[in-house]
Image (tube, rainbow, N blue to C red; front, top):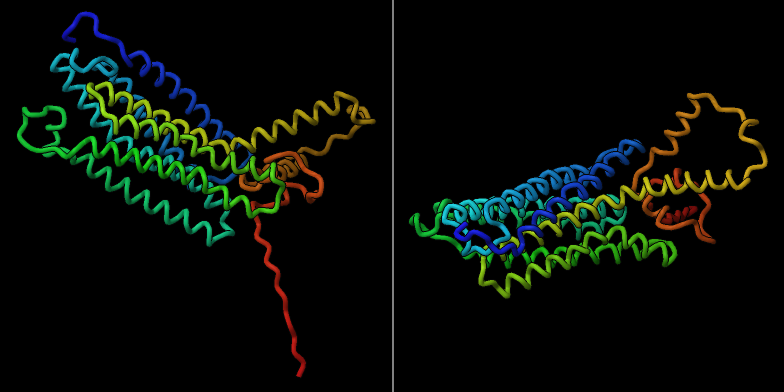
Length: 350
């Protein structure tokens, strides 16, 4: 530092944010896979995307912590020349990590929709096209960010190295615009898909809330866009704010990607708790001691039947309690969203 007592503008905020993001997001991702294995559900594309996104998010948080050790959160003009170089090096790494992290978070969110609404191929095709556009953008953006300066060391050495750099502010604006647009689309996509299902309004709203929760990151993306457009006299502090908004966007996206799966676990334990409460309140006329226990093999077989269902069927079935007028069929006999097609046959006699 060039001063003895540098101004702590975002240093503490940055460390606290990373200290909260790492354990909270990790707990949600761990519970996601616990639910998968606990209820013997098969893994899908969204699980792979969620795992990759989690690793990238952890790397992003780690870079933010290291960045704080090199002046991140202090005023840039209070840093020593060596600290400025180290700070910009880790800023470069953070910009590269952001692209794949954001992409895989969005893949995890959208892959859930493509699997749940697979029978509605006409509507799901839009999601695939949207995913393709996102992949193309983030791949191009990643290449541009890697080669934003030529030679690359010019990014952190500046005029000490001969060469040229692209407009870094323009790259931040492009990222922010794409994030805002994509988050809004993720927020509204479940509306037309869920509205066509035959269920009550309350249940539709619950399902839309679970599936569209990832769009909540729109607020953080919009904040970053406004901040980048306004600019800042201190580029170091602005970049720390960009990293913090990336934490919020990635963390909220990962948590929301886990909610549909965790809904299975919550519903299971809620039902288990209700059953225990029912018997404790004298709901059964026969003492538990008078009941014959089933053989262990039968119990295991029944448990497999009960738990071997996908989160897509559970998501729809447990969006709320059973309502009047709905089918009394057990949820365990359902297999996700089904599309019923009426077929008529006419026979002509000669």
